[in-house]
Amino acid sequence: MADRLGIGIIGTGTIAQQHLIGLRDSAVGHAVAVFDVLPDRAQATAREFGIPYVAASIPDLLGRKEVDAVIVCTPPFAHRDPTI
Ligand SMILES: NC(=O)c1ccc[n+]([C@@H]2O[C@H](COP(=O)([O-])OP(=O)(O)OC[C@H]3O[C@@H](n4cnc5c(N)ncnc54)[C@H](O)[C@@H]3O)[C@@H](O)[C@H]2O)c1
Image (tube, rainbow, N blue to C red; front, side, top):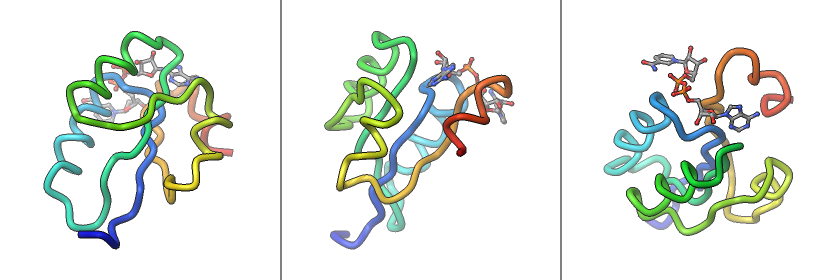
């Protein structure tokens, strides 16, 4: 599955976990990086799902060459910045 998209996850709360479960067996994409304003939560998610990179910021995540697309999993008040 070498051609799968590299997915970055922004926000690692409840709905992110569901997306990550879905990506586990996906032929389309796999999670390659995560970011959360709560670093411990991002680290725990990366450990649980075997995600290789925990970003220090959104620009850090977006700058990774292996990130082809992102899933924005932040609360509504924090949708704007990651989306733009
Ligand atoms: N929980 C559900 O069943 C569900 C279902 C459908 C849609 N959604 C939508 O998904 C979105 C997230 O909901 P949730 O339930 O996962 O919330 P949540 O509170 O469980 O998780 C949100 C995560 O985003 C992080 N976060 C907050 N601001 C951030 C920022 N600026 N940058 C990066 N990370 C940030 C928080 O630290 C938290 O870990 C909402 O828009 C919600 O409406 C949720």
